[in-house]
Length: 246
Length: 323
Image (tube, rainbow over all chains, first blue to last red):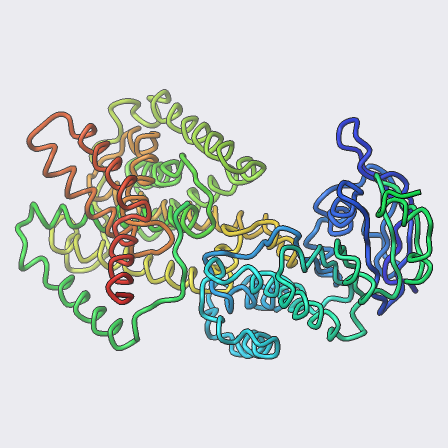
């Protein structure tokens, strides 16, 4: 059983074909990197996988279940988590509360009106432990809007991980980070357990080749290459797109 | 929308001490104030409950409505009509009025929650004005422009008649107190935190697996029901219901109370409501142009205290702690 099957997925915005007829399969535990120049349709693909956008055509299967027309929250409940290219946290809540909301989503108490949220000890412990294990315990009580950009990117990934997903979509987690912060975030992704399947969009080729089991290359809405690192590195078409050379 | 980080809170002994003092003062007020000012305090408490109910929507869930008077007003009409026409006692009339407010909010919620932002504002306004049109036009039922006079004060079957100012004050104090405690409970529940999450980022909440429509709908119905409770009390206070109770001006006033006091806490709207009632009372004694002065107050608050007066106080405290 594959973790994720994308079958002939297309998407138009008005007359613009943002994605046309993209198909690929990701196996459980795989680290799949999605690369491609600006406007290749990478984030559009993620928005359709997570359910933020409807597909114009095609089918998406998550562990053999057709999720093509499910709303985002149901996909999330089936184990599909995502992070955002543009940091998307709860800015006026504390970092701890951000993580708590992520943990609470899957908890029985999520819809409870009469319990006190702060009395949910098991969630509190879980959130604190999670922040500690990523070395972010020091900022737990700061409002998410007040932490550094690099910390925000890390919290964004932690919110995805807090959902204990089966498949995690990471949309350029290293975008805009300093070199030191990139090392940190890459280390973080590297240390994620292998029972989580990861799809990750990445601009930085070094990062992409470092993390990838397999790489899918999109260009102008089409899938133009797929393979392991060596195959992609030696693919003339990919080199042409990235280097613009003959 | 102005919002607060939830990081800081007072230590519990301080909260307990403040609560005890507040309860003692509340209990002693009838012996400290003249009946006129006691009546003013009753009005403040009722509007505080109304404003807190609205804050559940605007301050916590981030849904700005301009039709919140609909539920306040329809419950007030229900209270008046059930007492006058069917002669139901308070034990039946009050729950029935709340149910009517809740059902109205559920119906309007189904329609309005298909939209967000300024469209949500407009559709809630339009729906509330439909009720105003009915209240104004259906003379045989609602008395039209003249409203419903002579709504009786509730008879609790106790030895104190609520026609007296002091017993009625305690009645309102009790009901508003229970309402406020329930609201405090709701906003500190997992559900309450989910509402804050929706206010901050709907897309992230969806990605985390929250069915945000369900949360917004329940928040909308709860807010409408608590507004209805305030409406019932207001009908009893004035012994009168008029189309003004459902009018957009009423909806705007409760919005302004919340903004004035500070959205996103339950304390802010309480302060806003009290100040609003006090200002209205003081200024309208001297001039017909009360609304103009009110406008000026809001411009000043908007310019210098965008997080409301409680936000201003908090910033001030923070700055002193920081320096």
